[in-house]
Image 1 (cartoon, one colour):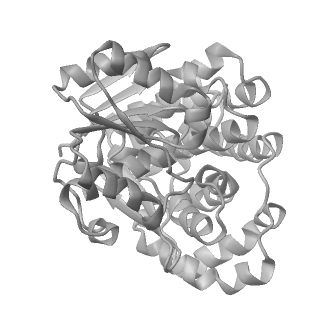
Image 2 (tube, helix red, strand yellow):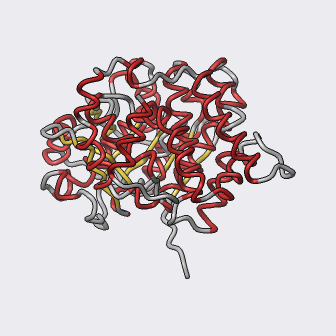
Length: 385
């Protein structure tokens, strides 16, 4: 059986990669890019640096800086309008997962019209949008090399999963130096998000030899460095390894899909505005514990790749060490429970059935080694509290 692998056409990796943006726009024979970003990226000077690189290559650019964390249908609309009314031939996405996800949606809606719900899974979007050059500033989402975007419909608090080659960036410029200014909380949340991507890709029912190789390499880079970058954001080697690990994890899950953690995470994010990486971090230990009986060898491989178990450990020993490590990471990186995050208990418990339905409807739990019923998802949510 063959496996289809979809990647960005250009992947530029390493310190200073973002400075190549002007040359890459020229190589793609584009002339009028729109930079899609958020206000923080403007304040930090990252957008000015991108515009400088473009200017040096003889390219003028405009900026849309109103993307928001966990993008919604309404938050991207002004960007869609700007693309439809402007004469843009390309998009440069600068920021974390939210600006990049926003850019993917704007690229398709700006070119073809319609509403985001038209492009929601199970539809697979194969139409090419405007070319996207993605410049990630967090080591986490891997969105720069995935064919996925997630946009919340605020009318019913549903996080809509949209997938297909149409959402894949044309180029990804993976420059770890842009992560050096990240605060510790964002570093932790995005870092555990990347680890979740790698683990879920490895245990996914859609995993392949190719995605396995990327997932294992990602875990080897991410796990030893999570604590280092949380405690010392200026550690350049750790930042570089986290950034590459995040990109490889993105490649892995884009080609093998995510599983139950992501399925359960999206409703928590949509209803309670918990950042995506943080809701994944909350769920990772508990969902792993639930799933191990159905893929014990696979999870033991994860423990060994992460460096917490040795080759001489039995499968059971490796998985015990894996569970101890996942709980220890959350404790050291100060990942809160839903209660500690400030979610109201009564609302959370009254919402469990709807959240379980939305989790199953996303399709991700079907990739999990142990596929849960709605009742089992509700039980995990209750334990999570």
